[in-house]
Length: 481
Image (spheres, rainbow, N blue to C red):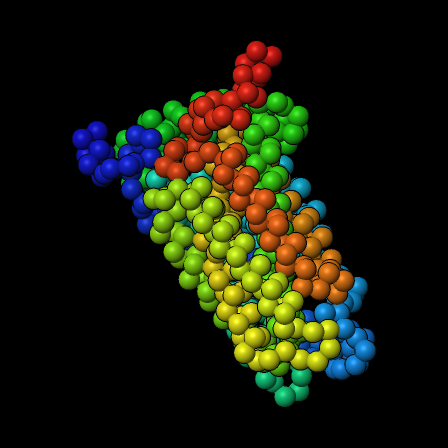
C-alpha cells in the first residue's frame, strides 16, 4: 500500500489508489467523439438556417421577409413555424431515443449504448449516445479527476459546434449555393468514428459488477487505475451494486429517499436550458443577422463566440476538481446574469424595430455574448452532465442520467420552438427573461446543492444526511422504512 499512497499524493479520491492510465485516456477520447458529433449537429442546424440558398429552397417566406419586407419588425424577420420545426425536429427524435436509452444502458451496458447511439445517428437521430457518454466517463474516471474527465465531454460538444461553424462559414462562399448540402452530410464523419470506436471500448467496472462478473471487474479496474491495489474501490462498487433494482426509473421518481437526486436531476438541466444558451448555439448566426451583420459576418461571429466557449471549457477542466462545483456554478451564474442584462439593455436602447443598428453596437453585443458563453462554458455547461451523475447512487444512476438528458431535449425543443416567436413579441425583454432565470438558478445552487468534488461516487450518501434541507427527507426516510 505504501506505493499506492505515494502515487496518490494529497487530496486523493477517498482513499483509493491509482493514477490516470493511457487506457482511461483512450476510452475517454472515443467516448468524447460522441460529444463532437452532438455539437456538430447543434452548430450545423443553426448556421444552415441563416444561409440564403437554403432558406430560398426550403423556407421561401422567411427568405422574402428577411430580404426586406419593410413593414416586418426587425425582431420578427426569422419568425417562421416551419423553420423552427426543422431545427427542433432533431430533438423530438432524441427525446424518444433517450427514454429508451435508460433501459438499454441497464440491459446491454454503457458501451453497447454508445455503439447503438453512433450507428443510429448515421440513420438520423444522435441522441441515445448523449445519455450514455457522460455516465460512461464518470464511471471510468478516478474520483479525484472525475470532474476534468467529464468536462471533456462538454469540451467535445464545443469543438463539434466550432467545426460546424467553420464549415458553414467556408461552404457559404461556394458560388452555386449548394454549400449547405456539404454541411449536412459531413455529420456522418464523427458518427462513423464513434461507431467504430465503440467496438473497442471496454465496459465500465460498475456495469460488470451489476452483471455479477467480479473477476473481470477487478482485472479491468487494475488496468484502468494502473495498480494492483483496487480492493477498496471494488468493495465499494460491489456494495453499491448489491442495492441494484429492476426499475430504477420508477424508483427514482417514486421513492422518497431519492427525492434530492430527482430534484437535482430535473432542475439542473432545466436551468441549463433556460439560461438561453441554446438560443445562442442554434440561432447565433440568425440572431447576428437580425441585428444587422451580413451573412458571412454573422457566421463568423458565431465562430468567435464558440472560440470563447471552447477556451472557457479548457479552464473549467483545469479547475473543477480543485475549486469544486459550487464555486464554478455561482461564478458562472453571476457572469451570465450580467451579460444577459447588458445585451437586453443595448438592444432596448439602440436597436429599433425598423432600420439597422450601428456596427459598433452589433460588435458590442457580440462581445457581451462571448462573456456570456464563457460564463456558461465553465460552469453550467459541463456541470449539467457531471453533477447529476455524481449524486445518484449506482442503483438509480442510469435513470438519473436519462432524466437529465430527457429534460435537456424537451426544453431544447420547447425553447427552440418558441424563441424566434418570443423574440418577435417580447423583443429585447427576451434577454431580461433569461436573466431572471439565471438569478433564480444561482440562488438554487447556493442553497440546495452540496459540494461533491473529490468525493468517491459510492460515498455520496453522507452528503444528504448532513445537508440543512435534504436531511429532513433522509430523516423521514429512516423513520418510514
